[in-house]
Amino acid sequence: MSTTPDPTDPRAAIRQGAMTPFQVAAVAVCVLICALDGFDVLVVAFTAASIAKDFALKPTDLGLLFSAGLAGMGLGALLIAPLSDRLGRRTTVLVCLAILCVGMLAAAATRTLTELALVRLFTGLGIGGGLATVNIVVAEYATDRWRNLSISLMSLGYPLGATLGGVFSVYLIGAYGWRSVYVFGGLVALALVPAVLAFLPESLDYLIARRPEGALPKVNRVLARLGRPALKALPAPSRAETETGASLAAIARPPYRSRTLAACAAYFCVMTTCYFFLSWTPKVLTELGLSVSGGISGAMLMNLGGAAGCLLFGFLARRAGTRRLAAAFMAGLFLAATAFGQVPATPAALLTATLAIGFCLYGSINAMYAVVPPIFPAPVRTTGTGLAMSVGRLGAVTGPGLAGMLMAAGWERPDYCVALAVPMLVAALALRWVAAREPAEAARAVPGAASAVRG
Image 1 (cartoon, rainbow, N blue to C red):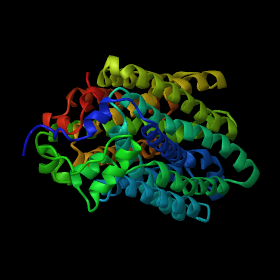
Image 2 (image 1 turned 135 degrees about the horizontal axis):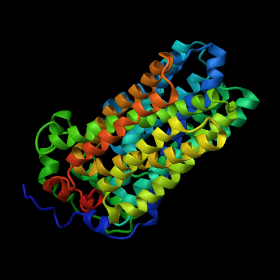
Image 3 (image 1 turned 180 degrees about the vertical axis):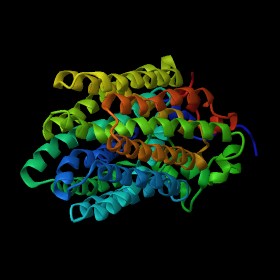
């Protein structure tokens, strides 16, 4: 098998050209899905105070509830996301939306903490699988010039969905109770299905690398919507695409092993800190004297700061280098988290610190979305990304759960904030071992991908 790509392969020309309306629409659908995921992840944070009152929950009970959804996300990234390397990206996205719809509607009907925790575990499967899959779709359909910004816009969907979700939650909880928030989320998931069917194409990388039945006509339908000529035959896949099986074993051996381990370590640490703040901030703010709506407003402010962080990251990453910029955001989150533990319990001070946390928090998560996918070839791209995200979800479970235990043990705000900020420094160090460029064969399989992660 040749080590150079087939000259008839249209992917190189597509990625080196301008973004077509078709590609913009595909990215836009992924942004909307990410927005729904952002709302679904934080829906428990928005409704925590009301649920705690209804079910008479302790901090450790809330920690369990937060962790249940995050554990489901880890399982979804590990078990559901790899389906897109076998069944296709589009099919997997539709499966994840179905899980989200059913899970959110079921949550509205739960009557006990155990029932709600199990439903949140199930819903997390769709969130984890969906996030990993749309990350890959954006990375594969964006052009070289706009890849970092497209990934940042996808990441922006997360805080945007969480912010709008917070606005709707304040109204819905006040008017109809906390269960209505979950009904709203389920209906939005259902409404996104037609958008996926209409505007989210199957991945060219998947079709050319995996060659499912009817791959050539499917490729040509996508090329027609991109304004490119049809192919008479599928281009020859690269050696990396033919030699790499869609399995975890493929990314556990050289040349991917060290990069996989480093990416997993960084994801774990980032998610440990980030999901502590994403899950607990509204509850901490209400305990410090803010109203329930004030606590939700604090979370919304965090997400607005995150939106600014995502946009800044997208514009600067190509020039500054993704890993260097990521390390700066991670160090910034450590400082902002430490400050949140030290500032006086006044609304102005707390909300200012919350804004700073959101700015650095989402920039750090966005960096992981940009760094990880390009180091894997197409046949295992979602498998590798899903594994790293799955390990990250272990951190996402650890952060909120550990926070609940520390609070129950009597730790004060300055102490548990510092303890849960330290992993960000470890994550910044782990990025030193994530390669600036993916292996040579993978680079040929993913034209232009190296530019997304340089530095």
